[in-house]
Length: 371
Image (tube, rainbow, N blue to C red; front, side, top):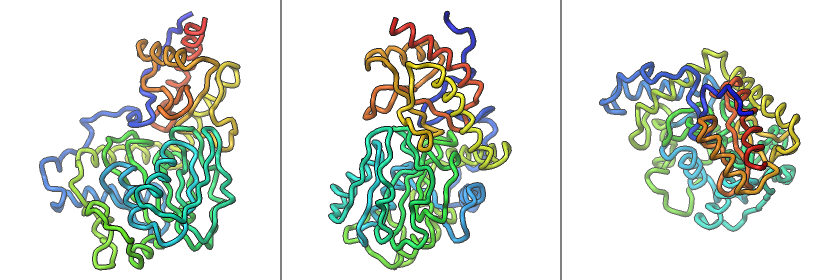
């Protein structure tokens, strides 16, 4: 039988992700619109976003936060182009975006002393192979594979190299050992459901030291430059962005962070995402035709939840189409490079009640298509 109840919010996309519950664009502070981002109130709003990020994430003293162009990709490229090349590099990757960073390191930066640690979708490479003398590049959560790093125990506290972490689908949804991370990048359009185009760059004091003591062999585009005269451009981390940001997007980001504060802060956001994952786990346990791409619970993402089905690729497409046309679930197909299946966002901006309403529809769609 066709289920009666539908999710109140059918937006389960893994990026841009669902807006926060109760979102109302009229609640945004739009007083800065039409003003220069370099005006006193413009800089104040950008600084507010930076300081609130630092506070909510509980970043260690001395860590810097900057708003940069190009979403998470721009932030990650900026970090790699500015910091890599001094030491050998260990690249750990197990999905599309992590593999993209390896490609850029080898084919664009043309670095040669690179160790490639690859795992297939649903798996995690052997992180114990990380050399503390090397720089390490990795994703915290593989958005296209549904596989996350379980902890930071594999990263040496006394490491000589830097850790560069693409954390775009992890920040604000997973506990992160910041003392083990020298560079983190994310975009607020992921976990917080913010508007796209902007990235966030987090630097540890060790990363700043590298920036001020090492000059890459290649020329840096203006949009990537973090230093001037051998010193960090501090203004980037105080509200003076490299290029013109959308202040409407910044206001939207602040609104999302205010919501995180209202629900109880970072711990509440993490718990909400984990509770969402539990809804899907219960459903998978009760149905033998569906499973997680990440079969190991310890490395299973609680944001970008990837699922495999006992169905052909064409049948999976038909299931996705049925759910979309019924206005039950939008944009839940697996990433184009990943195995055929479903990818359901379970970050904190998604309500557990909507996931609970979705699950019977998944079964209905599967039975309808495969009958």
